[in-house]
Amino acid sequence: MATTNTTHKTKKLHLTTSTLVFVVAIIFLASTMRSPLTGVGPVISSIREGLGISNVLAGFLTTIPLLAFAVVSPFAPRISRRIGMEYTLFYSIILLAIGIILRSLGTTSLLIIGTALIGIAISFGNVLVPGFFKLKYPLHIGLLTGIYTVSMNISAAVAVGISNPIANNTSWGWQGALSISIILTLITLVTWFPLLRGEKVDLKTISNNSKDSTPEIKIWKKPLAWAIAIAMGFQSLLFYCSVSWLPEILVSQGYSADKAGWLTSVMQMSQIPMTFLMPIFAEKLRSQRPFVYMFTILYIIGFVGLFLELTDFSVLWMICIGLAGGASFGILMMLFTLRTKTAYEAAQISGFAQSIGYLLAAAGPVLFGFLHDVTGSWDSPNILFIVSALILFFTGFISAKDRYL
Image 1 (cartoon, rainbow, N blue to C red):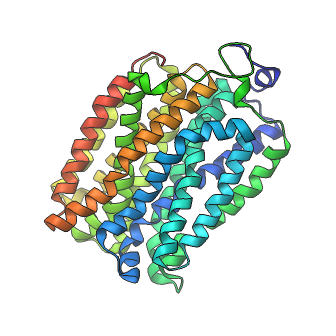
Image 2 (cartoon, rainbow, N blue to C red):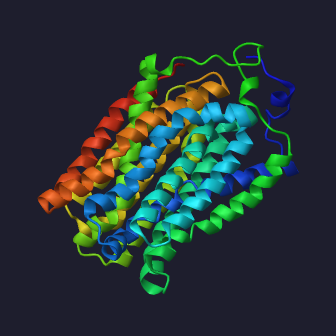
């Protein structure tokens, strides 16, 4: 694989000032990738009551970003090729800040518009980060992915935990709970300025030949790409349905809203060790199938326990679901780079998998709300959790085999 001088200079992750600046910027970028979304679940009942909307529309608040991911993801690699990786991500952070502000102004229309802008903004980070790591520090993709995903899950867990207390125990209400993530967004903008002034990477310089352009492979014709995309879809469906509806399910089983929010936060925090370790371990193994077995067993234990309403062990079920979610997400993030040969291919498969995957996942939160409204019970949604975990196993098993697109 031919590379430019820039690539050769950045192969090793030396502890220099520029490296530390890069890692700090990545940590704060990661903190904005989930916290604006995960804070919605614990206050969804407050939003529903405050605006007088149905469970289906409330579930749609989680679906809107997923639809945005599906629509925008295929275009992210091309946009970054045109204006640069660093600038694309910087502008997406600005768009995210605008979306957070609009969403928090207290009307149904602005809530929907702001949520859509948040989804569009986050799409760029979702798609471009794997290729960014492969291009910037190709020898340390696992470590950087681990740091990135841990930062993402810590901020997501904090957002889940503080959202309901802010909504119910302060004068800010649910609008304040939704707007609190603007703080991380503004800090991210500040940390990103040095990357705009420093040496930049270019997706056009990494290819299978010495030319300045990378030919696009026909992703949609690759069975492996479809397997990764479907796996991504059901992993995302499990995550977004969990953060949206687990608080409500736990309340139905006798927990207070605050306790349900913190139990969901336990699930989020439980992802942290797996999201850090899985990318590092996955990079060292030729096949990631043993990890697919592991996270599937954890998912099944957690969701079956939830379905049986064994509330004395709710903390254990949340930990199992969290460990499974962290492991599955960490593995899938690494597959974008492990199953490709170049940074642009990594961005391509990331865009394709997240477009198809999030389109699939988008049905989840609305379907969960619909099933609950129709049946008046959480049994059917809980069964859907288990079925989704099994589908994730089969597609993940196919994707984890050692091969390239």
